[in-house]
Every structure is written in C-alpha cells, then in structure tokens.
Image (cartoon, rainbow, N blue to C red; front, side, top):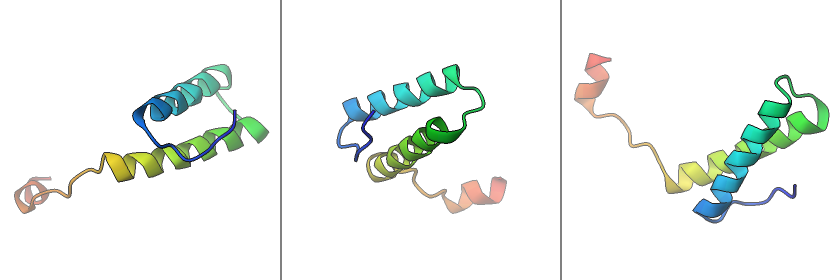
Length: 65
C-alpha cells in the first residue's frame, strides 16, 4: 500500500480498514508491517486532528474529573 496524506473521509476509512487488516493478521507486528501501521497511524491522526478536533473541556468538566 502506498501511504500518503489523507485528504477525505473515504481515504480515512480505507486507512482505518488497512490498519484493522494488518493488526488482525499480525497481532504482534514487526518490521515492515509495524512500520506500515505506525505510518498509517500518523496520517490518520493528522487528518483526525485537522478535521475532527476534540474540543477542550469546560472548566466545570475539569473540576468534576
């Protein structure tokens, strides 16, 4: 698989499916498989942070945690 910048939800879904597939086949990944999972994790995280940010907690939520 060629790993590149994720630009839309379809590509995000494909990347997530690829990670699931790799982890199912390789419960303890090593070498190239581990590298692919790590790279996919980075581009997935980058896309999600840009397009699905988690808002900071409100002060009331922080006090009750």
